[in-house]
Image (cartoon, rainbow, N blue to C red; front, side):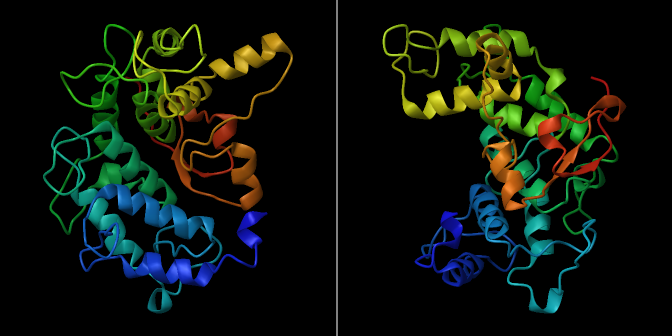
Length: 286
């Protein structure tokens, strides 16, 4: 396990990441101070991977965090993320910024890692946000509206579909138990239509130049809708499943003992790939 390599100074990484948290709970990307919810996700994910993430007082875990000695203020971190939510249910890179599907993943992923998804429906008393008990539904509806006629997903209203949002949006919907809110068959076909017939790579959209970025996210999207599993069944082999929270193979997530939080589907169902995480109920019917 490379995380146990003696050359890796884990304490130095923890110190560096924690030093980037600002007074309002946000995280800067580096010493120059740019703030973005992407950095909130990256910071919490790094600390979780190293087993050093303090969890909030409401987390359903056996070992509670000693808040006085915590390396970051997880409550402020969570409050800041919630403050970046907009009237449409989406999230931006900073408070008041336009909702964007990429930022939605970062915020939902960070809330999942911090065991704080319940705040989607409860709002934040400190920032005045209040979405009663339908905040997750409002966000899921905004994400579902990103599906275009082609079957692909875009990141913002009035934009073209792009394969990379197969990951950003599907991962968030998967964490919230609402993948069924989009047409997964049409999305799968869109991703397959973006594969180049000559070199095999996947592009952002059909007939464009393929690249490794969209190939990775296209494969992740196919995994999250179960398409790779179907291909594996036909071929007599098993393809690794992808975890929507950490973007890692689920087998690795289990081996590392990473446990985030997810919301069950309507009726309390939970995909097998998600059962390693803490589960809260709350998915509604679209």
